[in-house]
Length: 191
Image (cartoon, rainbow, N blue to C red; front, side, top):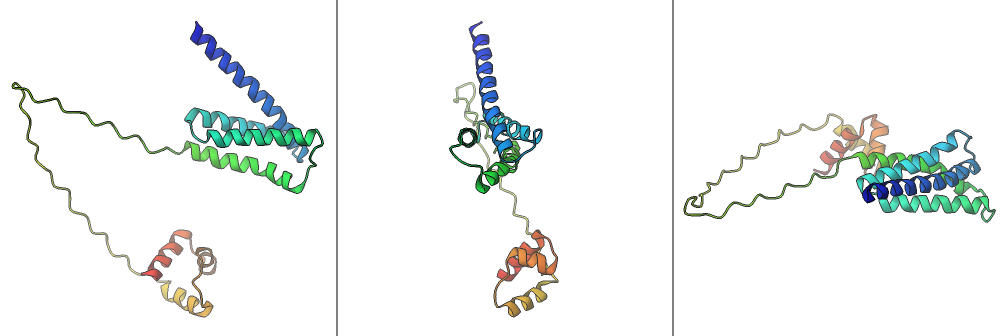
């Protein structure tokens, strides 16, 4: 019974804390210019991010700092100690994209733990030690040589005209190619 009470008390404390933080986060969103309904998404996003971080035991410090900062800003604005300003509106506007990024990162699997080695039983007269034969590793497979990109001569001419190596973005926009191809071309230029 004590364990069930502790879980209930923990859940109640969590619920009360989320309601308290959500109220301040909502008011901050409203002060920053969010509409009545959309402003509710800010506390929803932050609190769901907090629950996700707690459940996967990652980003916990970051989400706690975000909750504290958001609540502190909300109370400073509501008490009139700081005015609503451009930096504040930008900061509040950044909450949803940042939460989106971090929640997506939290859903990515972390390296799976390696299984613990299973110890071999000690040899006994009934079971003598077994000899192990080494199995050779497979020979590495040679990668096929990549032919140079057909755009390479034009890129070299572009570099000669500009007197500098273009960035990936410049390659992408000037030659209307994707990032992967621009990276391959840069690697071929370096070779």
